[in-house]
Amino acid sequence: MHGSSARTPDLDRLEPRHIRFAFLDVDGTIMNAQHQISSQTVRALRDFRARGGEYGLASGRPYFGAKHVIQQLDIAGPCVLFSGALVVEAATGNILCEEVIAPNMAKAVLEFARRESMFIEVYTRESYFIDAPSAFGDLHATYLGFPPTVRSLDEVIASEKILKLEFISQTPAEAEKLRGYAKSFPELNFGFGYGAAHPHILFGNVTSLSASREQAFKHVLAHLQMRAETVASFGDAEADIPFFRLSGLSVAMGNAPQSVKSAAKFVTKSVEDDGVAFVIDQLSPQASL
Image (cartoon, rainbow, N blue to C red; front, top):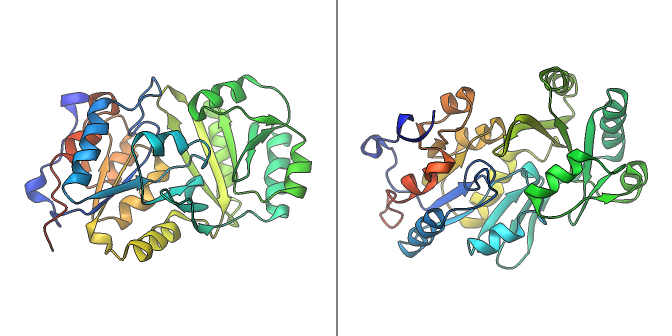
C-alpha cells in the first residue's frame, strides 16, 4: 500500500506515547527510489531533536556507505550498521561493538555463491570487494555512493576482518535458493530486503551469528541508558523485524511487503510520501513515562 491507502498510525492508541530515540532504516525508509532523503524527513528529524529526541541508523549498509547519510541528518548518537555487525557512535566514530565472520564461515558462503553462480560482495569496515567487474557491482555502487574494489575474494577473506557478505539476486529462483541456504546454515545470520529503486532485486546480508540486531539493540540501550519502551524503529524489510519486536514503537513503511507490515505495530505512508516524517512529527520525547 502507498500514500493515503496505507494503514496509518493512530497515536492515541500508542503505548508508550513518548519516544526518546528513533532507529531509522535507510533504503526504502528514509531514502527513496531516487536515492534521496526528502527535505521533509530532514526537517522532521531535526524538529524531533529540538523537542528532546534523538535518532540513529539501523541498516544493513556498511559504515562507509552510511557516512553521507549520517552527515546529512547530523546524527550524533549510535548507529547499527552491517546488519548489526558494527555499532558506532556517529559523533566520535567510536566503535561500541564489532563482530566479524570467522574465515572458515566466510569461505563456505563464498563457495556456495560460486557453486550456484550467484553474485556476492565481501565487506570489511572500510571497503567492499568483488571478484570481477559486474553490472550488479555497478548497481550497488549507486546505493552506497562508493565503488567496490576488484580483488580476489579468497585473498580478502584470508587477510582481512570480514563484517559482512552480501548476495544480490534478481530472479525468484535465486531468491528461493538463497533463502533455503540460509535455513541450512545456522552458524550465520541472514537478513533480506529489497532496494527501493529495484524492488525485484533481493539483497541478502550475511553476518556472524553473534552480530544479531538483537545484540546490537542491547548495546545501544546500554550506551544510551534507555529502556526499550522509549525506542521507535522504522523499516521496510524483513531484516528490520528484529528491531520491531524489541522497540516500544515499531513502524513499517507503506511500501514494505505485507510480511513486514504484519510484524509492525503501525504502518505509515510510503517513503515517497514521507512516511517517517508523518510519525516523527507526532512523537513527544520530552514527556516521562
